[in-house]
Image (cartoon, rainbow, N blue to C red; front, side):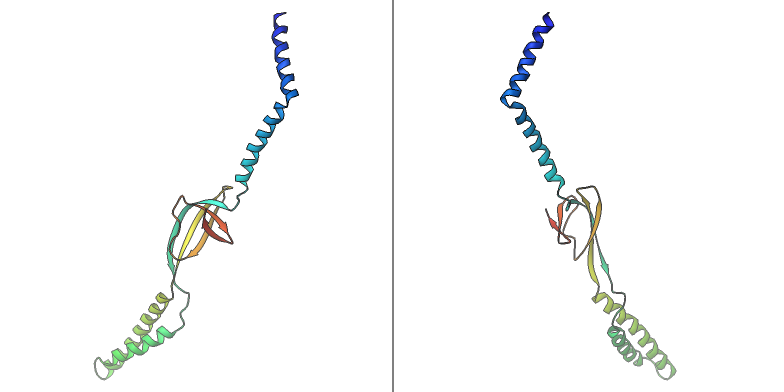
Length: 153
């Protein structure tokens, strides 16, 4: 009969808690904690920078202004060297070399500095964003995506 005596107080305690409404408070607290977890999970646009890589991209083509200018300048300089057939050969070589050099200078002047930023999103995916200019974020920086661009979180 001793077990019946310990069972009755436990049953009485449970009945009292149910009657006073303590169980709904516990359920509400669990709901608030769960709701808070959903608030963090809702930030699909949040992430952490994994790495960044800055590089220079030259245009695929130049306008030709640099090549023409370089050819003229190279031809004039080549014409100053030698006489007869040597002068002709030096003029042609100067024009070809100047054309190449002028094209390279023009492409270098129109090159863009770009940075690829790899971000591990909150849902575990990795995304890469390409931005113009030098790196703005270091590894470990918390960021979010706003209008397709990265901003500090």
